Length: 339
Image (cartoon, rainbow, N blue to C red; front, side, top):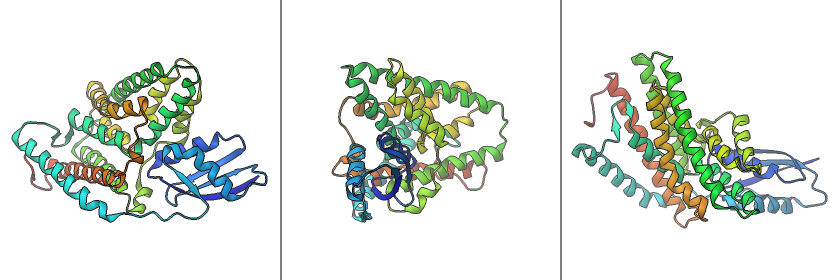
């Protein structure tokens, strides 16, 4: 067995590790694959015959290009495009100003001190569905579509997938909330939990900016064996597979999902937990629906850099709001905004 290490362009989060490894592992002559998010590399081992490293890299690119990744022998220079911030910053600030004004006028109720409302969960779901952290779910949809398209069934599997996803987030979110009821959280524990949510979202926002690669080391991830089993379910060809895959997405390595799961644990209620995670899943539905029934992909858009930097700044704003509310809740600082 020969082993090669290639450079891979397009990786942004832990979901990218799962997606690249799972897709490359399906190649018949490859027996070992390991992706590295920090160094943006992919190591493969197998029987490659007399093929050159360039030919192998092209073969990997052919498999991964549909997900927005390219593989090369030489390290690819990734331009950070600081100029994108000239557009992203005004848009994000405008969003923040509008958000505060709507709160002040009492027209919306997205944030309450110390809590995350269902409106906030829905909005975070929208941002998550557009971010690269949801790339793995798009990969699941594409993989499943290819499997069932051979039999001429394109619509029913997609519908079953989204139904399974919504049900699992509602029910399992409720289970997490009910488990939280077994723990009595005092003021300090509530503060720590809220602080953790804010920090996770802050890391996610920084990662979306795609300019500080050190932050990728801080991003939380689901245990790899769970995520791989969830992704592997999409390869099965059975009438219930789409429904089961939709359920399995609850366990995939999306940092936004994990942040909401952490919060849900603190609700201490089955109903509140179910409605929170259900609202989050509903927020992801419009974009994932487009991915299911079209070739929509924000990753291949002309203004992808501006979009992700704007989304990252908005997520950072939400994280800062949450951190400030956590400090207000225990009396460290005075309220900055009267929500």
